[in-house]
Image 1 (cartoon, rainbow, N blue to C red):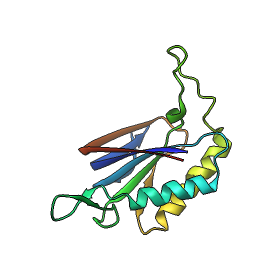
Image 2: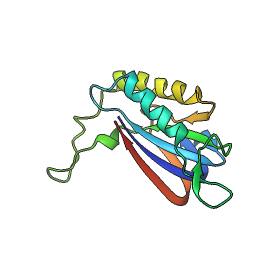
Image 3: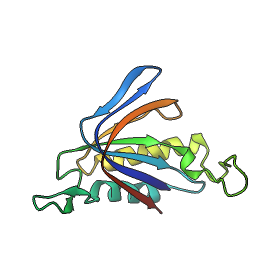
Length: 145
């Protein structure tokens, strides 16, 4: 399982022009599920995302988590994180888990992340989402287990 986590200001997620989720500031986490992943991997990444100290404290050091600053997390399922373009220019997605196995793990990650006291907004699994995000920093962290 892999996540791309970005520190953001206002972020919106729409499907077919309809606003689905919005956060005023916090983190956008794109979550990719690989073949063979399970609840252990989802729980690990949820804990890491909740605890990432990438917000500045009063001394300007990245020392605070999203919970510490009262931010929210927008968790978006993104199978393309497992796109393999090492052979040719068209990515292969054979490492990405099938939707019927990936969606329950995405939902489990939402539940686990919420258990840390973080407000979690979500995308729509499998939908063509349009995301407008205002990156802060920019700060981008790659997580993988």
